Image (cartoon, rainbow, N blue to C red; front, side, top):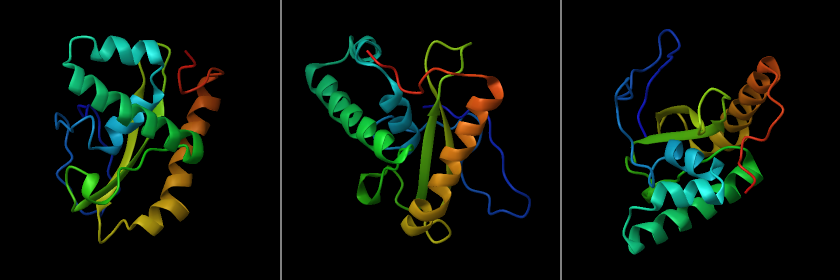
Length: 148
């Protein structure tokens, strides 16, 4: 996953997330949101050139991510599963019609500033609401997750 745009509130703590930063697909909330939004055929296309072991890892991550998106509306890779345990982040997928695949909207901060409880009670629902508002504003009527 590659960050292509960032927004930061004024007076916020700057984190290491800048345009061009690459995050691992299997150990980031952004990667989980992207994977979870893929349909089975899109996942197969993504993993077709991978080893059987890597394909299996992606399929497992995809199933977990889809479950999280269906229950919460956002992806949240927690604890030691994260590639950077000093940062807490969540991500929600969005499927713009001009792209052939989903993109992820990310919200993150240092774990001391963005606790798991704050994510589940406030930030996660707010991110889902913001993406739903974007869907409404842009007139998108199709699901964020692929259905095949």
